[in-house]
Image (tube, rainbow, N blue to C red):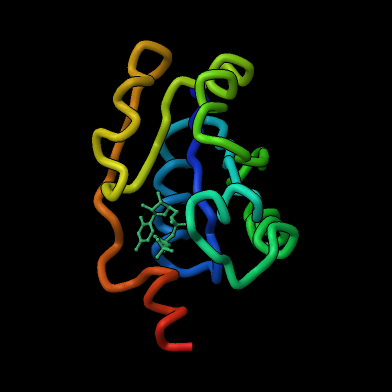
Amino acid sequence: MKKVITYGTFDYFHYGHFMLLKRAADLGDSLIVGLSSDEFNTKKNKQSLLSFDKRKEVLESFNFIDLIITENSWEQKIGDIKNHNIDILFMGSDWSMKFDYLKKYCDIVYVPRTPKISTSLIKKIL
Ligand code: CTP
């Protein structure tokens, strides 16, 4: 049983998010998503257009996501990995190397982002 975890805000859910999550799910048997809380987004200087509950509702509609947990801090990852027996932390390439310090707890996989789409771009257009 291979367990995968990924983290993000997933605001104004788009095709790049879908591809990232689908690839993460395909890599293992179980996918957990750490969804950034509105408070954590504020700390990251990220203002999401949709509230945590709405962003969570979107993710809940995908049957390849097994569990959604709340991401409240940068520091919680070690605890999450241990508590959920995670095998792989899966992130887009914008996070390349940033989570390498977690290599002693699980495998880290960074994948290329889907080009030409991001929440920032959608916000700009809106
Ligand atoms: N992601 C991706 N391809 C994209 C956009 C995002 O693979 N085109 C991935 C990110 O690398 C991350 C996850 O989706 O692992 C969640 O990213 P998030 O920051 O929520 O979305 P962005 O669209 O990158 O948001 P922003 O523009 O606000 O940074």
